[in-house]
Amino acid sequence: MDGGIRFIFKTLVKVPIIIMVSFFIFNLFSFTVTYFRLQSFASVVMQTAVQNNYIPSAEYATLTASLQDIASTDVIGDAFIVTESDIAGVPDATVKRQYGDPVTVGVSAQFRFIWPLTPRDQLRNTDSRFIGYGPGESSGFSGYASQSELERRREAIAGNELNRINIVYTVPGLKYYPDMN
Image (cartoon, rainbow, N blue to C red; front, side, top):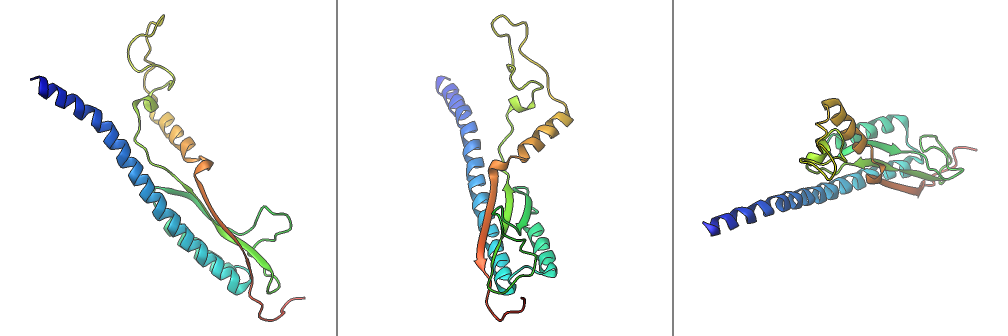
């Protein structure tokens, strides 16, 4: 009987560890796949800008549609093609320019890590105790949050800018012939 109880408690300790390790491996795998897909797409955008010395509107629409197909997973959100830089004096990459001038293009997307919900995330007051009475408290349980509050919390986490993947290149355009003055 004593060995059976010990086995049960060892199993109960292992379960949360196994769950967290599984989510970590999943997030690592999905981040790697996402990063290389975005890297490949950024290379296509870069090649388009190098060949044309800008991104034509028809190709921009095609590239945007392709990026939305890539971003249709649950781990990628807010994906867009970077066509201008924060650097002063760098024009938009969708504007035609003299051949041989540099072009700044790339891709930016937000990566969403997926973690299991903890019971604390479902409480109305996430700072309150789960169950029982604290020292000098009559009750530590604040009740559960409403469905709309849970959705608001998920959206707030989804907007975290710390998980943004930015792949931006400044490339020279090919020099064919001078077509602009």
